Image (cartoon, rainbow over all chains, first blue to last red; front, side):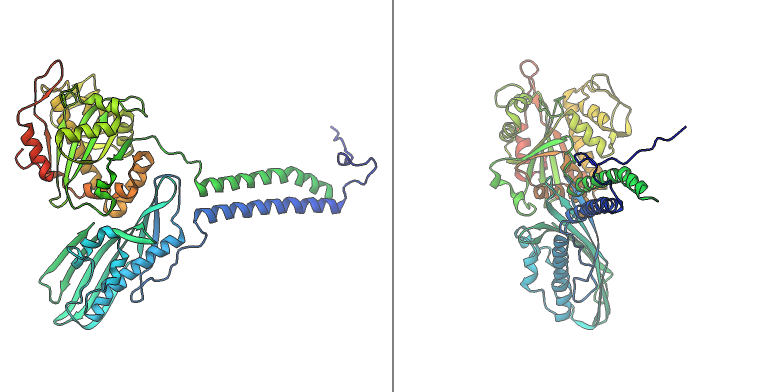
Length: 233
Length: 305
């Protein structure tokens, strides 16, 4: 079986007798194809990563507390509509608020021996104000008692954020869950405090805490057995 | 490789390669933007009842008593609303972490008119809610309704429901075929359980009571699955794809869910309203109904019933 041979054709519309494609023209075509392919690949990557991460950058992995290692452990997205991923900006804002809650609400009172300042209340939305300054205050925050007389060793597990987006892909709620422990040297020995904390945030001039699940357990010095308290909203 | 072969190879491989990459780009946009993902079938409709300002869910979790209306309608059209055949008013007392369910048989004649169930089909959920609110004498702030398809799909999606069947239920009309004892019901099974009236001497009265029991049991099942605040968000993510919301935000649903999930099912009373005879198949409100509603109205808890 013979293989027919072909003479390269001139491009359509080219004048009869024009030069057939040479090595230079093939190389140009090769470059065009490669460039188009590379361009499409880059565009696909940009669309995927930029759009999906709602801004491109990753959430910060740094500690958000000045006093304890408090880092983001992960983000879970719950989507009530189209798939969406909580953006880095939102995650960082939520983590910053978590850091302020820990620093101002849990650590500063122990260090200063005084209840938290009003600053910490500004992390919470209007609907929670009555509860955080009333019945839930003792579980949500430290109050500076008993006085610190020895070492203070706070520790926290990484924070896991669960974020809910609505049908339009807008994030409307997010819960930051973590555990916090502190060993405090007080008169008579060491007081161990442990909290399991879930703070629920909603967009409100940034992100404000609109609900919480906090369980507090104390044992050790100045506590008979152990005490437990819960605050839910 | 000769230049000619390279040219042929590029001609053969280049366009498909670009096509594949173009497809990748479209897929990236698909996944990234999520545009083509369709909203699921509607399981239920939930609405905040006007006046909206009266609904305290707009700011924080309510500390006061809340009243809700849950209605199962008989529409076979997945997008339709039919007769309100399963009518339950739920009072929740957050402070006491207790609740009560007032079950209203579908044939109850309300306000001197005909059967109450027709109001839903004729006037919609808003008018139906107002009718029930006036009848019981409580301010209902949220109401929700589901139909056959929505109910079965919802039950199936959540992996069915564990119930304890109290007495034999074998009824061809509803499809119920259950022996007494613990049962895991799938969507159609749960629907049959809530529709069966022929297995009982009390007929629709017992069926109505069973529907209230199913609500309590569903709460029990949900509490075992939606653990913690993050669990509620995951639950909302799932439910949110299938709910039609009217004047309701996800924050409302979150607070509603949080409120309801704090109630111990053991602290929920389930009572069918007393009914007397009536013309035709209509049931007139029976003796003692005023006392029942008064007991319910003050704090959402039935103390003397």
